[in-house]
Length: 87
Image (cartoon, rainbow, N blue to C red; front, side, top):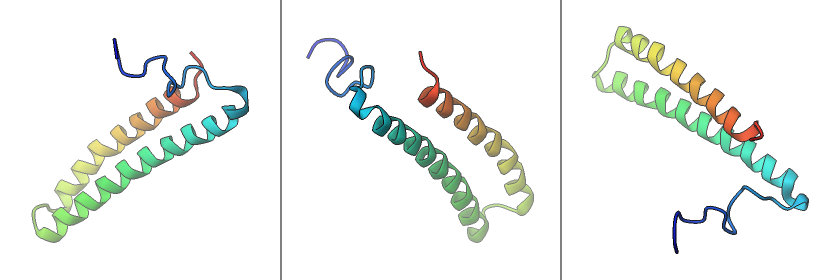
């Protein structure tokens, strides 16, 4: 197999045939949305579960959200840059 798995191989996104360029861009956008929505949903559901289980108060959940929301925003920026900025 040599070196790293699939770097420059058939599944590599480094060279996309012209006829698949629009499809690949749409899939990259879809992946960004999926990652961000999954992380946001995970944050919300975990906090709701902690509240229902009695493991957290509203004050603690507020502090957690103050920490997690900027991380989700940072993930959004990095995902956008990774998917849409040409190298």
